Length: 101
Image (tube, rainbow, N blue to C red; front, side):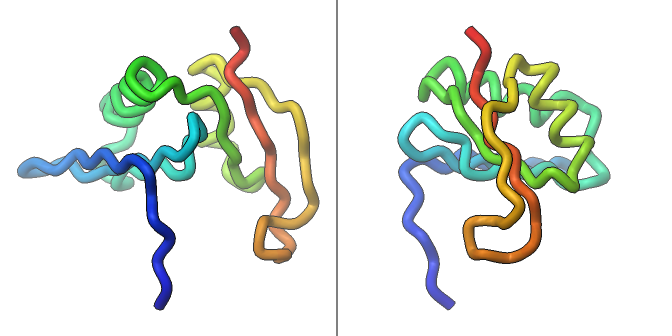
């Protein structure tokens, strides 16, 4: 399996909480929080850290993930583009979002 190199990787790992965030060129590439830890502020803390320290101002999210879309909107991101296929050409619509400054 081929792995993509990531410019910045932040990991939350303690007794109970697991999550990570990948950033490349001011773009949030991935944000993951374990399902049993959602709603506890970990995603918000990671994203705020990325916005402050790595100038994260853009991201892509699967349109079929309304929970993530709502989270990013609350964090100040707005959709500027939509595609019907994901970046691998699969039928998963993507929303491209930028920080509304």
